[in-house]
Length: 443
Image 1 (cartoon, rainbow, N blue to C red):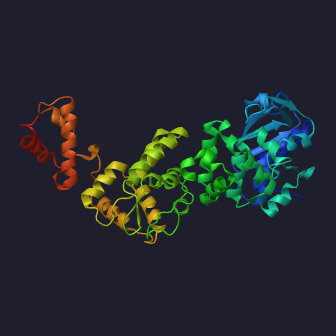
Image 2 (image 1 turned 90 degrees about the horizontal axis):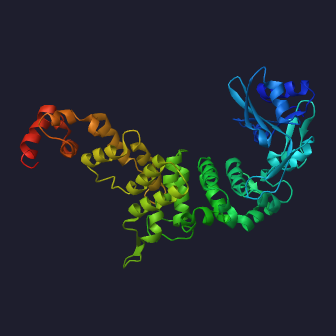
Image 3 (image 1 turned 120 degrees about the vertical axis):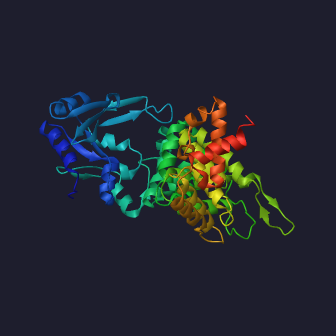
C-alpha cells in the first residue's frame, strides 16, 4: 500500500537510501498518518550507524547529536527537527525505564520488536511498503491498544508504558486489550519506580485529551490512580448526600474535568477543586451532607499534590487559588467583592475562575450559571483599577510627604483598599488628602 508521508521525511529516506542504507518512517508518526491525524514529529529509523547518519547529512543540513549513545541523531530540515535512529535492540532495563544495554542492528524486525504497542511498531517506506509484523494496522482499525509480544515483559522493561497505554486509549478513544489491561493491573503498584517528572509528563498529556475523564477512569480501573493520586482515587464511591449532587464525588469531578477547556491549569483545578470534601463531610438532622470549609482544604491538598508531582510554582499557586475560591457566592457578591477577586487573580486569570465555577455549577442539579461572568464583565467594562500599579499615586509621592520604608508600602495598601471600595477616589489630590486626614496622625 502507498502511504502519503511528509516531504521532509521522504527526503531523509531518499538520502539514506542513495548511500545504500535502509530507512523507514516509524512509530507514532506513522501511526498518526494511518489514523488521519496531524503528526507533530517525524521519526525515521535506519540501519545506518550514528556516525554514518552524520556523514550523510552533515554537508547539507544542521545535524545535532542528540542521543548518539542510543543511536539517535537529529537533522534540521526547513526548520523542522527530524529524529533518525539506528535500528536497535535493548536489554537489561534495570531502572524500570531505560535499558542498560543496547545493540545496533541491521534488521528492521529487531527494532520493531522492542517497541511498546502494536500501533507504534510499524514501519514504512515507498520501496518496501508497510512493514507490520504485529498486526498494528488491524489493531488500529479495531481501536485496540495491545503490547508487542508479552505485556508483562514489556511493562517489566519500562513501567512508563502502563501510563502510555492509558494515555493512548484516552487520546484515540481505544480499548486496552484484555491481557495488556490485566498486566497493567498486576504491575500498577510499581509505577512509582519511575521518576516523578515522567509521571507528571504523562498525566499532563492525559489531562489535555478531549475527554480527560476517560484517562482518569482508566487509571482508576487499572489501579494506577491510587498509586499516583490516592486522594482522587478515594473520591470513588464517596456519596455527597446532597440534593444538589446526584453523582458521587468522583463522577462529579469527572464531569467538571470534561466541562472545562483543555488548559492544564483549569484541568488540574477541576481535578482537585472538591478534594477537601473527603475530610469535611457532616450530616445534618435531615440527613443532608454539608462540606463546610472544603474549598480551603482543597487549596492545601492541591498545593501538596502538585508540589509532589513537580509542577511549576506558577501552576501550583494558580490551581490552588482556583480551588480555594471556586465556592464564592456568585449571586450576592458585591462590586467591591468582584474588584477584589480581579485584583487577586489578575485580569488575565479571572476568567479561569469563571470557567471553573460555571463547570462546577453545570455538574450539579442547579445547572450552569453565568452570574459571575456577567458581574466581572460589568466591572471590567466600567473600571480599570485592580492592582497597586493602577493607582494614581505611587511610592515617590508618599516618600515626598516624609514617609519611608515599610510605611510607604503600608500606606499604598491602605489606599488601595479604599479605592477598591470607591474607585472614584483614585485621583492623586484625593488620595493625598486621605493620607493627611486618616493616616498622618497614626504613623
